[in-house]
Length: 258
Image 1 (cartoon, rainbow, N blue to C red):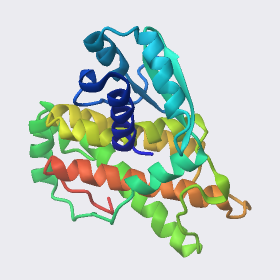
Image 2: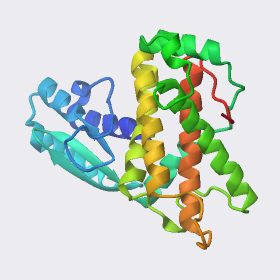
Image 3: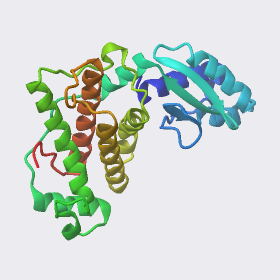
Image 4: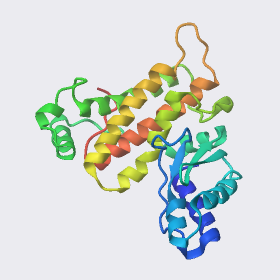
């Protein structure tokens, strides 16, 4: 289940409960310190204020309905009426598939990339140009290139990505942390704030590195390839898609090799 799908579902439930008092737009994002779910929304609070309903009671009604949706493992009411939605294994696998797209790798153009990244972040082109960990641009482009390298290496091993292969539920903290950021990409990109998008891409790059270290997508040593590797490769592919799309929006290239 994608944030857009959940947003539409929450809006539909709220319209059934409070009619025209339902918000015209339901914002769904990763939970900001309000719980352990995959998504969070404060739309119920908006609807409660507009309709004069008790927010906690209305949140309970919406939570009960959402809990029966396909791909949802559970819904909790947090604080005055925030909703935390936890996806099940099928829901997370569907999200990985929805985030994955064609390979949009492009040949790099270092000087142009440094200039456009600087325009988005306020950094100087000179600070963005070096290919070291001190450059946020390099870290993002390297993260994308690493996803493509892992997929090439997987092909050499006869491994193909498979979202949720073997029932893999992406439950490890590093997997869930990365998936939450990837799911947030569309909302942030649509806001039209280049600086915010660049910061988000940097966070995705860091989370992608942490994921690869904690949950290797390829077998190590004498380890045999398994379903978990296929599932992690699918998440790696989704990460590459999201990074390439964000870089493209900023007018920056997404090289497959660095």
